[in-house]
Length: 201
Image 1: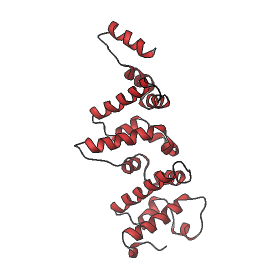
Image 2 (image 1 turned 120 degrees about the horizontal axis):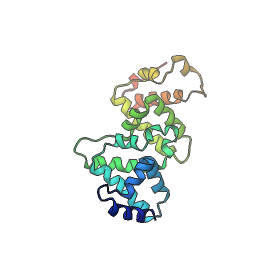
Image 3 (image 1 turned 45 degrees about the vertical axis):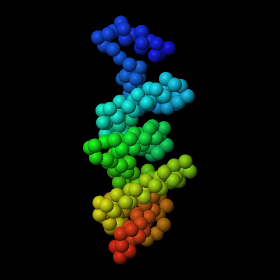
């Protein structure tokens, strides 16, 4: 019915033609529109609209970071990894990296830029405790650790970034998940970089 309405509307307004997709995105925003399409995945029309939306990003060479913001995934916070929109974004990221002539980007770089190291680390720790997102979060945490190493951030540097004090590391701190993050990074750093560089608090 909605599609028929737009088809009827266009001939009468030839100076201002529109599309079903444009009506959806203008009315609801890209994030809500995509969510509606995904919730109606069994509908050929919804699938067509979702594919058209993604194709528009590809044609415009829209950077994944911009699409991330467009879908308001930068505001999802702790719900990021369970968001139904994330899968579509990840698929677009892969396509962009395969086809772009302007350089590639990574999932962890986008997440870190949007949320910062400390917040993202907190989100990943929480996601590791949820069965549906556990493995995904573990993989991302490994990627985050690798990025820190590439950026030459030592475990000692990470104390201030994660807002920890040395004394926080000497006892079991159940209320501060960053202690677990730091310990895991310290171990990974000592294994991948050089055991002599691992920080001994």
